[in-house]
Length: 354
Image 1 (cartoon, one colour):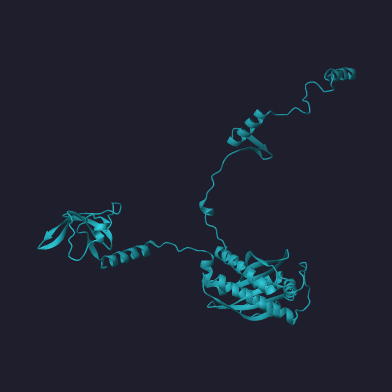
Image 2 (cartoon, helix red, strand yellow; image 1 turned 180 degrees about the horizontal axis):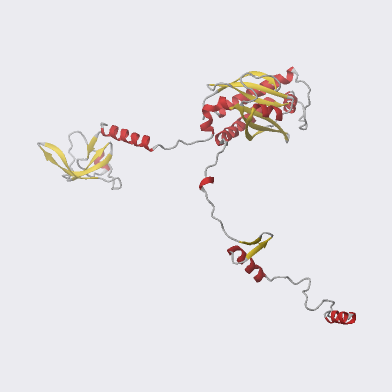
């Protein structure tokens, strides 16, 4: 029995050592045509796809858009634009202040409460508080300790260092003065970049450590944080401008770039009021009596008492503030020159020049 099995196996092996009736390693299991037909059958549902839960038939389900059509977003596109303008202006003023090439770029905008922001920031932190009349309430400029060190070095002519954490070393009086001067440049840039949206007057009101109690801002205050990056000698140094939502609340619709929703009733009232007002307006009415052509030399030789002959006008136009509105026939009525109107001129009609 064993010999018979061995002989049968020998008969299925050809000279190349490949068992007859089996596929060679290089031969594909399915041809390209078979693969295409299989994929097409699965997509249109003609073929069933088996899983551990039984056959699953391919199908296309309806997607209902309406429940997903309204998206609530806290994005502030107008603030993004203002931050970009602020960065351009601040780049120039920072170069003058530090005496070296500085490029300021606008970064991300985040919304969070002040407590979360303080917990996330490093302990070594300087915060410059400012007001922006006529807005009510304070706003802040936040500097991480390493940025304070680098600003001070550059201000006094030092070299640009690598961006490293400062640690818990206290800030010196000189560092605080430099931060105040740089904050003044930021506030001037804010006032200039925001002028198109709302004239504001940013003014510094105090310098605080992150652990200090800042008047008007507690841990639960909602903050809109705008990050800015200063690129100095290819090193990135960041600071943040922090707007409490209550302070900036009057400008939020404009910062969100919200458009006024059309009110059909109000628009109808406006149209009615404007229409009635137009009909009571007093305007100048004029017409052409006639026209003729003359050589320029003849016009130059005219003198007082000369007579210019014109053809007897028949067809003429009536103008309302130089706009042709009526066509008519020129004549005499009750001993006075008059125009008998024949038709209103449509806006698309040829408009003769007066």
